[in-house]
Image 1 (cartoon, rainbow, N blue to C red):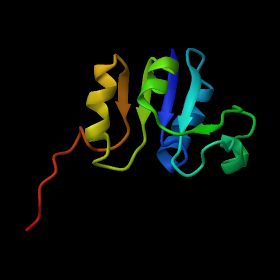
Image 2 (image 1 turned 180 degrees about the horizontal axis):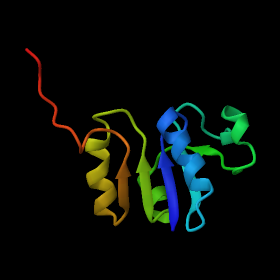
Image 3 (image 1 turned 90 degrees about the vertical axis):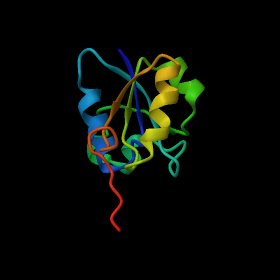
Image 4 (image 1 turned 120 degrees about the vertical axis):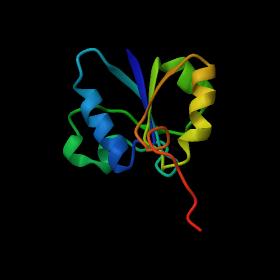
Length: 109
């Protein structure tokens, strides 16, 4: 499986990268960050230097579609609600690490 992690620079995203990099059936080939474009993953997480040599890219739906079969979303809560439909529409499988599709939001008045 070809896999990507969107927002791979945060805690959940970096843990996903760590776990996926050692999975025998996964080829991790797309990681994104808004702030760290073109930096190596290991430059931010030097303790994970030996697991991959990927550079952060900007998020782009077409790039995700070209490079991946499955996308892990590690974006802040409420952001994935907008992203998931478009990812599914182009045929990608999505695993959302936020609470957006697990918990209902209720306004507190």
